[in-house]
Image (cartoon, rainbow, N blue to C red; front, side):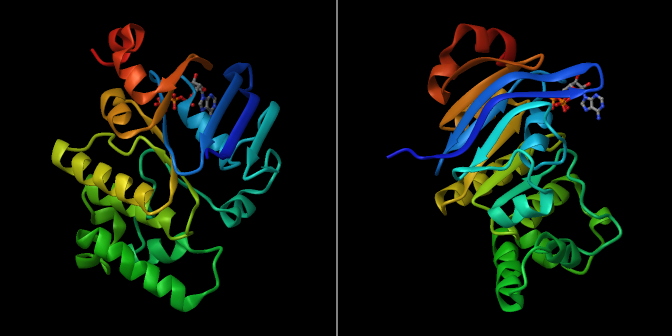
Amino acid sequence: MTKPLLEIKSLYVNYGAIQALIDTNLVVNEGEIVTLIGANGAGKSTTLRAISRLINPFKGQIIYNGQDITRTRPDQVVNLGIAQSPEGRRVLARQTVLTNLELGAYTRSDRLGIKADIERQFLTFPRLGERRNQLAGTLSGGEQQMLAIARAVMSRPKLLLLDEPSLGLAPQVVREIFSVIRQLNASGVTILLVEQNASLALQTADRGYVLEAGHLTLTGSASELLKDERVRKAYLG
Ligand code: ATP
């Protein structure tokens, strides 16, 4: 049975005079990978930032696990089980891989559990394990992306928000990262994936939404969207 984990209801977000999201309605069911695709500036990152509560919506509702989180504090949202891996990776360049992972668990207090989860990240991403004491700023782009995802996973999220995990990375690294995204989903993590690489995103996701200049214009199963003439023309080249 499908159960909504996240429901966005008629959400509006403004940056001053710029309307970044207009009457956005979106559902992510428990266990799904849902992708949000769209051109530069369509409002994809804004949607994720509103869910993580890094920006305040002007109007509308965000319901997570049946609870209204529209005005909840960002740290409380993490505690409830939502984690975001931001665009551009944003790892702490002057801190080690290990410290970055520890910081991902900042809302937790179970020391042993945190230690075990760090080792688990190193099994998932052996390259991070080999570089555990290296400063994050010295990692390659792909390794930084892996670290950003591993850091988000350290809060033990039920819902993982991924912002452009393929951005600027070589195809082999992208394949590795998307294989981990599928593994995480198979282990029970629900995923909302923002991507400019629409083809890859739709091949990975169960369902998708298309966002154009702040408006959701299309939605459907990933296979339907892959076949859709409008999607093919605008996003699949
Ligand atoms: P990208 O892939 O380029 O990040 P996006 O679909 O994620 O694109 P958003 O970053 O959500 O798009 O931006 C949506 C709109 O809001 C754009 O017009 C953008 O210029 C504007 N915007 C985003 N952040 C800010 C900000 N901090 N201040 C003002 N305008 C902003």
